[in-house]
Length: 382
Image (cartoon, rainbow, N blue to C red; front, side):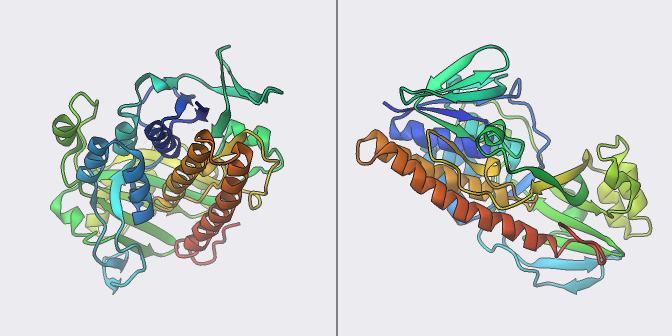
């Protein structure tokens, strides 16, 4: 039986783990974080039909039913307002069939049924490919794990990628933003009646997204997957404000007074927008990074990449997650064929790499092009 080591317990790595378990392979997931806690990686994401199908194909039925139950609609118009909430357009482009999911709720569901296959507190130092056709992961706590294949699903700062493709670096995307999550009062939901809303002020853009759960996640989990830990989560409006690149906060992200920063930047805007910010849980100010070039091919061996480790996309409401889940289902299919003796393992990994780079580099470009809609006039992203 093929043993697969998955480095990173994010959405893509956990989707892959489920797909491999379902196919009968032996899987271990190794996560650098010390526990499941909430990651500061954003709030709501939108999953297009291919990503939802990847989840359906990978997860046990009861977990997939919980995904559907805790998702929300992304149908309806995309609106464009000015800062005084004057409607400028009601036909902004966007996905028609995608579903909204809370990132932390989805990750909690994906941890379900994996049990001790997931080990926390395992920060990868390096990997070693052996002459016997194995690969060993060496962790910072002095432990190690050996398998037949190692998959780097450890995000944009991937330790696996740094060793495997060291020539590719991260650069600043010249994009800084503040993010918040505001409980879904009726007047705030009215700002986002459809798949998304953009508010264009002078040199500033505010993006709004509705996360209205079909069922409250804690309640749905108690019925559909009894025993699965799930925090209470009320519906909310997720918003992101892009900080002008010349503003001092853009060069010193992580300010503790993020709320005051945003209120300063939207001074004079419509009261509903200012109240949206005042009522929010804030996740601070952060900068985005991108790769300094398209990801090149690397010598095919028993180590490969998945998700942001291979194609770091600009934050765009789910572009990265959608691509990572497709990576997971395609890699699982290749590894399963190899495990069943229907093809050679290395040829399966070579085909996966070709597909990964083609789709992943295209997804990165989609993210860059989408950025042009949000960068303030006169601003420029690398």
